Length: 266
Image (cartoon, rainbow, N blue to C red; front, side, top):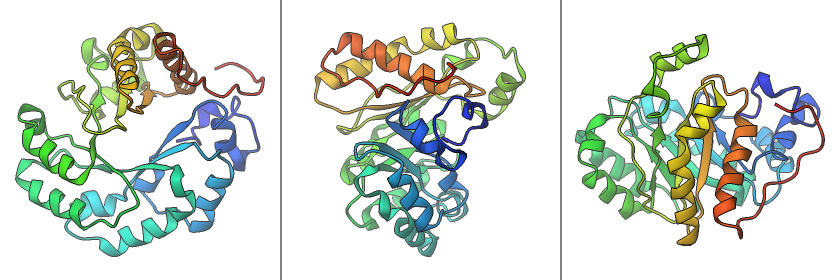
């Protein structure tokens, strides 16, 4: 995600070290590229070298495993993936299992078996997109709780309140899931994905519920990770910092984000 072209002029560092610049703005990143191809171990070692020890990677498990084999195969690919990301060590906050919208409650035994077979050392976070899971969340929550895994909600409710008004919003309107809002955490490390609008004011308006929820989790001793998206993601790092500031206003003990070197603003 840190290679987003719209961020090139703003993130510090040479082009091959854009992650180092991103890590001056935010303290966590979605590893979406691992969904499409497993990087080399050497590439991952460079990610570790560009980030401080407390930086959080939420890495998506390869698509061949989640969508191709639907968790019932692809074990060699998964083993290769786990070997490749080892250099990140404790920077791996969670391994992210994003399941296709067709993966429904009838396949819960497959998910349970998959999670039960994973070796220790990593936390898992599961994102589902089948509406039936939200209508009756209990069975999925039981499977996740048994494995110590988190349910990752992708909150698109604010985005879908009004029709799209730009090309990026129209693309997101056609491709992003429309699912009920979910705000319950299952573990001490909840992960939230939030999609706003092109208009920063509407994005900020739509995330207000999450400011209160994140502050509440922090008061409970949890350590939430929140990813802010917009249809084109051009302003996402700056918006993420604003979200953090709003939460910190309610939880003064929350550590501030790093102060980036002076560059052009987003």
